[in-house]
Length: 191
Image 1 (cartoon, one colour):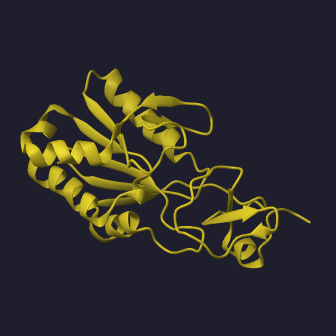
Image 2: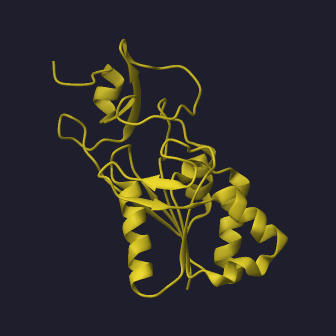
């Protein structure tokens, strides 16, 4: 029985690396998975998923994939699994489309992404997954203090940024995972 699965974690928790390992496992077993990401994520190139530890793989864009699905529902039947990275950038409607693929085509959809933004507000795609997915799994990482990191702090040369657009693409140069306490304190490192 296929499932809609949401694997979430703070930044740096190896979500993309996990997505690429799952893709590899399907391919190693002569299955035909497809790796997708929302078109807004252009940090590593339009058609590339890259993890912080250096794993990379070509991918397709979620919106183009779903356009093909809407043109011909049977398009998705060629795939044994659908793996979506950076799913927080998906729309609620795109998440509903992915759930339809699970329910009506019996194809597992395995999603990876952030639960919340730099203000601890849910992304629309993540919120919709939390509402309707079959399984929710946390991929854990730690704060600089050693406690579990649950917050994605955006920062600049002046410290933690508390206001701004929900989506500002970046990596280690702009974001750090913190425990809730150090996020509240605005403490990026041990003094």
